[in-house]
Image (tube, rainbow, N blue to C red):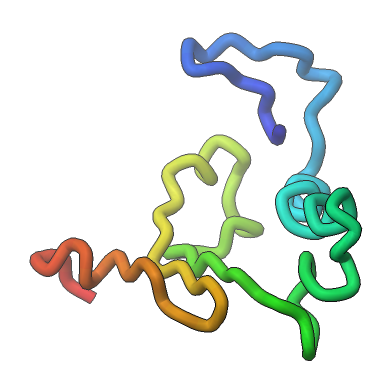
Length: 94
């Protein structure tokens, strides 16, 4: 979405890129809106369901090319930690 760059490095439709905030919205709120559930999910608000991915760094501080190397530290679904990178790779320091 941000670079329109394929695996080979070729850029497809550079004029069709979108910014980071719009990309995040399209992967969160837009899906909830499309399923008519935007009143209960899609945003981090009190009373909303929240599935959360915790990243190893702030992607807003990265270039679009650097975002792809970001790692997921943990994933929370329905209030339960379903993935913890540090538990999955016990030899990696915290």
